Length: 238
Image 1 (cartoon, rainbow, N blue to C red):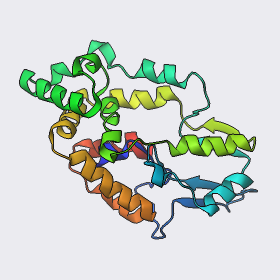
Image 2 (image 1 turned 60 degrees about the horizontal axis):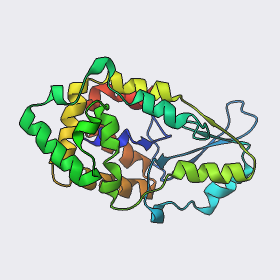
Image 3 (image 1 turned 180 degrees about the vertical axis):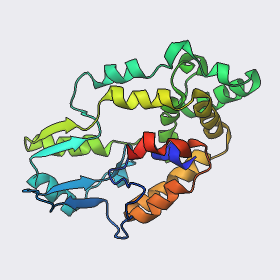
């Protein structure tokens, strides 16, 4: 299940099969050398964090202040991003979550979803399962979370920096169609029906993240038996 959780984090440090995983502990990294005339910086975030974790240290704010542009995973300054995400949330070719599970399990999943997010499963039956799983994240955090990307964007916007995205919504949504729906439903079922599974996994991942321990994060990703292992190139490395 770990890679399922990781899919909803904005990991900016990724490694090829031959790359050496850094042992230094930091979320902020400098890119320089190799003929580059100016330095750039990588900063790793979770997409959603509780208020106490939505605090950037002085070094991060100083580097952002000195930068000319902020590139996020997606361009959240795009006013159409909400519409684009809604358009990409539906399963392709009329597929539904219901068709990949039996009636009794579907009903139990529905009860759990209603308890966690207050939404009948019939209303979201056509949403891609991994997208639906992301709606469970606030309940796993146990707070009313905020977005570090949006906070960074506010800081960059206040100083007049350029804001842009590295990927498009369509690029990201396409990934959900390339991972088999049957596997996605299986993982969604596990999160909905396994007591505190997502909460425990999220707490473990956040503990590693707060330490800025890139090696431990890498090992955490590699130690996974969810079935998503064959899709790591698709989800992260590519």
